[in-house]
Length: 250
Image (tube, rainbow, N blue to C red; front, side):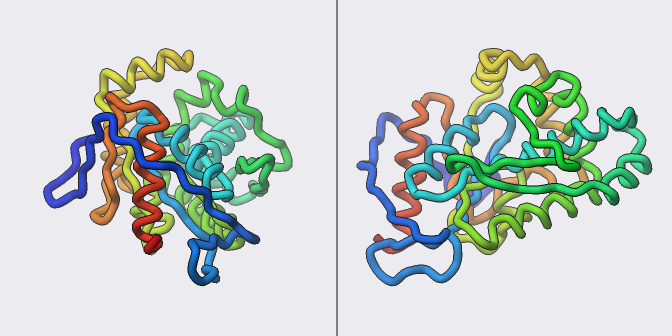
């Protein structure tokens, strides 16, 4: 997805920023000055296979906060829809199921976890091919997005998080000053997807995510855009951490 006019865009070429540790206490982060009274929230958006999950996970570890994959929530509910034998295209039935479904967000070793209807989700279930094929249309249902955005905000309200997704900076946490958009060329993203054993169309996913009416994939006007096409994960993480330090006045 190409950035619009006026966007801050960085394409790093071998730039390395020195790592620096941050001490965290009960979801708050000390930046060398006063202790922040609000949880540190890092919003990391981007299209499929841009590398945002890897970056968000490493940034969370460096900051001592929780990594949250917002897409796991949509995948968890999609899995539950399929388990109930509901056609993902039957919007009415999906809404009815949503109304009677409970979600539970937790944490394990600094990684956010999700249980749906009391069933803890595993990577195998969330990455299943049928879930992968159905998640985009289900995630495009406004009521689904509204409910899960509410769950995401409630989860983050009591702890620091580095949350990745497609509408984290634009919709979920529009007030956070720490917004990043991780991008990469379609060719690179296709290759990364295949390396993960996922065979889907990046172009199709991009069309669905960018054109849906509810919380489409967009680049927040104040987000820092990082092209990861020719960068290592470490280089992208270093750039993100450097930008966070700058925002925190360190």
